[in-house]
Image (cartoon, rainbow, N blue to C red):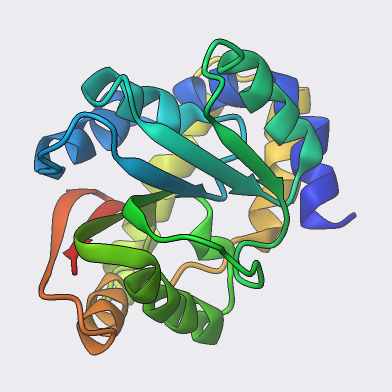
Amino acid sequence: MEIKDGFNEIAQKYDNQRKLSLPCFDDFYNLPLEVLDYNGISPEILDVGGGTGLFSSFILTKYPQAKITIIDLADKMIDVAKERFQSHSDFQYIVADYTKCQYTQKYDIIISALSIHHLSHDDKRIFYQKCYYLLNDGGCFINADLMLSPSKHIEEVNQSIFHNYRRTSGLSEDVLKATGELMKYDNPAALYDQLQWLVESKFRYVDCVYKYHQFCVLYAQK
């Protein structure tokens, strides 16, 4: 099974599964909004690996007139996003590999949630550089994702906490099995490495603005 097939299979249930399987769901998706400082009312936003548009739906609470482009490899996930945002006629949807897509415009904000950790580490680093060039001057990049601790012991503790939470969160055995299969594609990199990659990509301001065990939110401004 390819990764896009796995996500296509759970597309209709994805949002509810996120809420049940993410112990820090509300903070993970809401706190990034606080650091976004776009001054206009209608930013151009690119949501990479945007899937069902879950992260974009949070962004709209701050910028209800935003123009959002959602790109994802899984067409069934994009179908859910189209249904969710059917009243937003100026949204765009791209079914493609966001690391290889030939983008035709620049953006004020680029966001991603729980997607970039699927890439190889080299591809993560290269994609951070691509995000820098895709942003307008002063633009922001936010990556809310799984990231490793530099300590093997702490990482094992984090993993234990996460798996214990999933087992008691109310997810069915079928869902636990399906999401467990998808987790085989996880390839998170260390938090410190990713901060360094953003610095090397020439972003002016770089920080980890939120961390709950392995769930981190990185912020970078061009």
